[in-house]
Image (cartoon, rainbow, N blue to C red; front, side, top):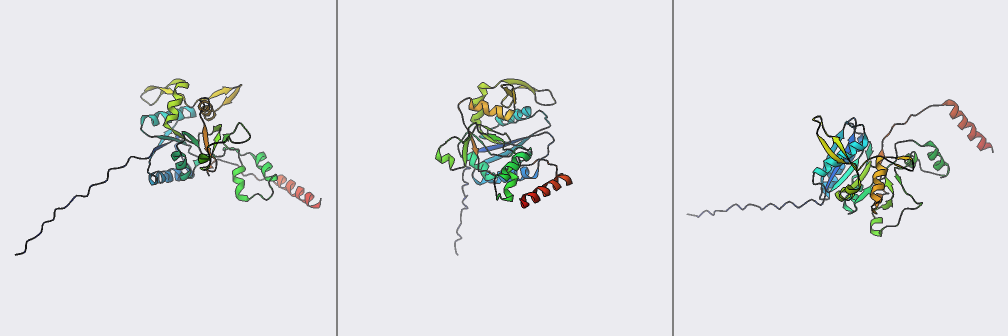
Length: 277
C-alpha cells in the first residue's frame, strides 16, 4: 500500500509595502467647477506617472469662490491637513506634461514651477517677433501670441548648479501660480512672515484662522497680484524660485477671430507696394 505524501501548503509571504517616494497633492480653484480637456488629460497622466516613479497622487478642487486669493488659501489649508509632501497648483485652464511635473517633484528643490503663457493675446508683441525673425516656423507662432507668466529682474537668468541646470531649471524672480509645485517646507518657512485672517469655511459658518499665503499687495503704488506677492515673500527670505523653462504647457483662453475687409485690403496694397519697390 503506497503511502500518500502530504504536502503542507506554504503561504507566500507578501512583500511589505514600500514607503512612497513622495505624495503629490494637486489642488485647483475653480469658480464654476469646469475644466478644459488639456487640464483633465494632465490630471490623468500625472496620476499614472506618479505611480510609475514610486509616488502617490491626490487631487482636490475648491469650487464656487470668486475671490481667487481666498480659494488659493483654502487649497493650502486642505493640503496642510494631510500628509502630502508636495503641493501643486494647477489651474483649470492649464495643461502640463506629467513628466515635467515629476522632474520638479523629484529634483529635491523646494519651489519649482512650469512656464506658461498668459491668457491675453498681445498682437503687437507677436508682430514684432515675427517681423524680426525671418523664416519663423508656423508651429512656433502659438508660443509668441501672449507674454509668458514669469519674470526675470535681470536680462539673463541667474547661474545655478550645473546638475540642476541640466534638468532644465533656471532661477526666476516671479512665476504664475497656474502650474506651481511646492514642497511642504515652503509653507512652514513662510508661515511666520504672512498675516492671518478669519475665514468662513462652510455653510455651518465654521470660522478658522487662515494664513494669507496668497494675498494681494501694493508696491510703489502698483497693484501686485497674489502670485507675484507670494513669490516676493518667498525670495525676501533669501530663497530661490526654480523654473523648468524647457517644459511644454498650454493655457486655454478665448480670442475673437475677426474679419475686416479693409484691413485685408490694406495688407494686400502694402505687399504690392513692397514687391514693386
